[in-house]
Length: 226
Image (tube, rainbow, N blue to C red; front, side):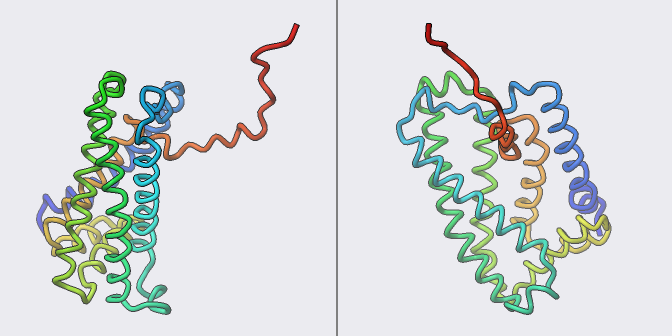
């Protein structure tokens, strides 16, 4: 196993996770006002709802699919589906929801880059994270075509082993598991880990915020008669 492979897929996941946790905590503690989606809908609402809905529906299903597909051991899912069947299901569902997400994301990028009011309100991180998400999404969709070359699910098993060894704190085994897979998969995994690094410094933080305290908040009087 090469030292670079160990560094990128054995060590880097824990660095990314540390930055994600510590960075998110620090931002929430020190700069709560910036902890929001920074919606630009007030600047221009044209096409915003459709683009946002397509993107969010697609990415939520993709995230759930990755979570289930990578972290459920073979010994569990083999009770209901074979490895090759699981790969086919992942390719079909991932392709469908990935396409929905891609359409929504391209609409959001076009809106942010071409609408003068939205562009003027956008920060560097707002624009950068959209392009990074696009690159990651294209890598994920392109991996479907590479997966057609090995429908036995062997690569999917290696990627799942990498994820499971990583979360069980076995970096050497994790790095060894992912070393044989193709470049497109490694780029997809590496960029996915890098999104955890970027997460605390972008608008993505709104993903882990749920305004549950609103339910118990007292009414705020904004205007009083008389």
